[in-house]
Image (cartoon, rainbow, N blue to C red; front, side):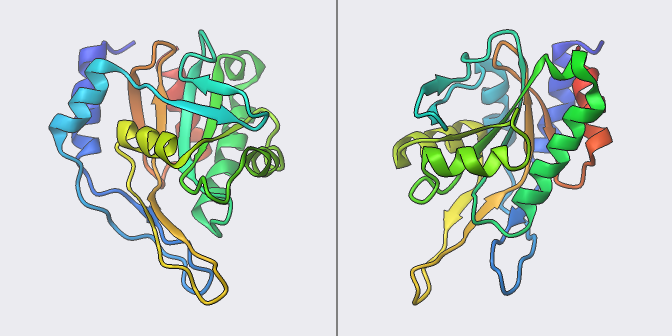
Length: 205
């Protein structure tokens, strides 16, 4: 198993790369690059751990400590996203299956919305359970969600609404692997497949 310091050296350069965005436009969905993340910001996350305070689909308050002893695979998105979000959730579901019961029991997959105005607890619960009932959807107030985005260094921007009041949210598309202690272990890019996710998780067990 690689040491935490060795992992940090590998993760920091990856975090400095441009983030892949989900441009959730039904007319022209695409992925474009976000601004690079400063290495010093990533280092801060690694050293201090990650904290968030949100609510789950049952309106129960949760934090990063709500699943003691479990590794967490965290993905940010929104339920109206037409492409990268459903694709990524499906990929995470397949990864859980490929891990096998023993390993999957040590992992919690979390979907955190970038659109709390529309993604109420009931909405996120239905959305993720339609993919895999073991995935937990999280939401909260605008302030709570923004705080979680800031901690994970997530890029998320709400676009102007159209004449029907509909809008999209551009957001980064990384999957974050967290340790049971809340430390960032891996930042997995959108190009990774289910097998890659399994390998990343097993590499830390």
